[in-house]
Length: 243
Image (cartoon, rainbow, N blue to C red; front, side, top):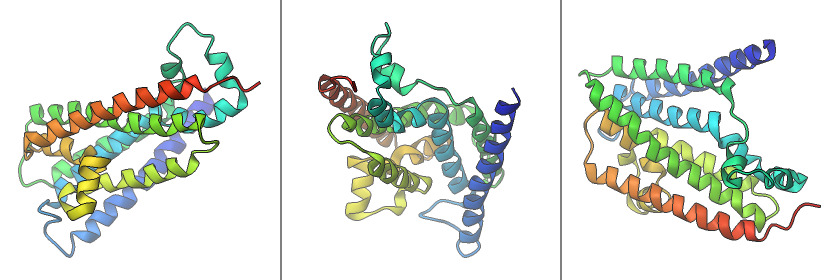
């Protein structure tokens, strides 16, 4: 029990430092400008809060499991899991639930409050609830993208570089999607929609969204989920046991 409490407190401190650093960065940016791509300071912080909420939930339920999947395959742990009377895919990617990462949700909640307190208006609870609901689509997209990379383990021995690349790219979703223009903006919107992952839920929560963007996010999330299942299916056909 003491170990779990210690892990929780450590996670709380580390997450507070990590989120606090970016909150300070936003404060510094807004000492020199009133808006960022048309977004006020409070609105940018709300986007940041949605980004961390998505990361927090993924950290709790599946991110570590997916990123360590290749190692599990090489160690032969998949041989043990494949005999279980449940979906191997779900068992592998939701193998361990990280309850100590709940500390991040607390910090993110404080960040939400901080962002909303700096708005020049008060968003309605129904809009905030709708924005939180839309994060499900963002989580499906993020989960599916990580699963695609994890499934490459059946063809490529190590996928660590891909995981680092996706994590770094995911950080681009901390900022308003309007910042990204031209070819790069289209890439982050229609190819790998990192630009939509946190911005669209925030736009809905703040009631500033063009709902066609919601349709695009939901559609791309569904597409990536289907692709992840196809890649997983063909990958698992190649698996012949680690022994």
